[in-house]
Length: 229
Image: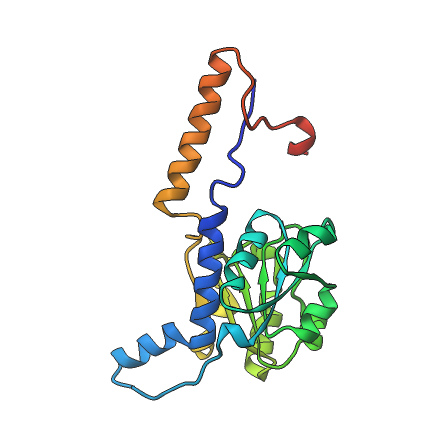
């Protein structure tokens, strides 16, 4: 049985969503909307992307797409990826950095690494620059949500925005959904890849590979046993 996938079909959609969450967290957009609806027009000062240093964890298709978008804002970008080649980073105007350096130097960090390992935990947060904003459009297990909630309450973290939670699809409730954190936390229901264009690209690529196999040709995106493991 030939198995195929559609790599890169949703990369731009997720990158757009990461930038949207970053702006929402930096400018208090969701909290501002809630306030106005409650009759509160008080002003909260935010941060401009062009004045910030941002760290990208995971520099694959989505991480690189985020870096390209940030270039338009004038943001300084650092990237961490064990497979990052220096010339890949230089081509996008990005400097390679360790996870520790991202915590210490960055005003915001966007997560785009595969799951299976913890990136944002209590020790990492202790190294973080005060007021750091974390965005997660990757995997929930990259983040210790209890540690993030504690860091938000102490002021170590300035904000958290994510498209996923560990409690997603379960009856459990994340500590990040506590009422006292609503002003500094933005959560969306795993919609990063849900654009008309991304779904069309996935469908078109999948259909093209099915037709190729049925015609006896090689599919464009076969998945090997090694990749599955």
